[in-house]
Image 1 (cartoon, rainbow, N blue to C red):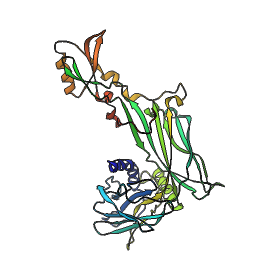
Image 2: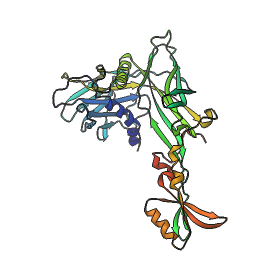
Image 3: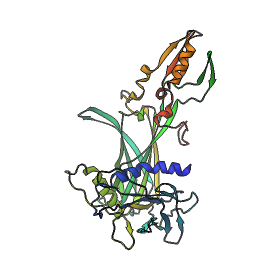
Length: 394
């Protein structure tokens, strides 16, 4: 379960990296494909993951997993662990295995099932200074589509030793949402019911897929101030009730900073073949005894993190928040009037995939049956979970 959660945590980021492979300017011999490596070790408890895949021809979005490889992470002091392939192309350390230490150097070594050998450069696990603050301001601007309103988030940090200089940020958004017609009972017939678990309130996570790096080298001191992280528009339901943003900060060296910066520019500038040709981007992984490019990067950094919450009340009072996800529920929900054949009608509706919500009553008497749809009654249908996060306020 832990490894599955880790897989889900990293998968969106890896999809971004895969989709960025197309513009890399590398000469690939006809019929060959390049190894793509993505992995990281931090000072946080494992397991850590290294993903291996293969590049595809221009215009293809098929990125086959590199399976059956021998993958290891080692430290310069001699600690080494062989990773286990838990999913095709996804290689994990054990939960209680190797753990990154600040000031230590690490590298990844790979031998494919075809006995091709690859290795990363040694990476120093740098100390990421604490995040000073994550904060937000309300923002609105006029666009061609109309008035755009939302929350702009920022981060401040500094390194009093002036040794960090290069930073990368990732984040996880979490928000609470509800559905309007979650039933508490299952209909058994003859106006009898049994108690069931309500699926009215859910929490959903969304991982960042954009590249966000910044450098303080142009400043007199190693200070990052008011660096933009994420704009959260009110045209999504995120801010309807309660929203959380967890920001992770990584310390980079100069080479890794320019890797991510170049990758970001490639993503922003590339498009069709008639657009500006992107620059060549070189990672820190190499094939041993062969002149063959390798795509991707093996990173090492401590993590500094800070979480903030945004309540609906943090928006100006008259700011509308999108609730269109459940607009159709008023149309989809209807009443079957009580009659000699109503039970048959209710069960026919249930057989069609509809949901019994509740009895319709006139005073204390049951006069009908409220029927609704799964999207209006089951919050997990929209990708969320019923499990309340440990950090969520009461």
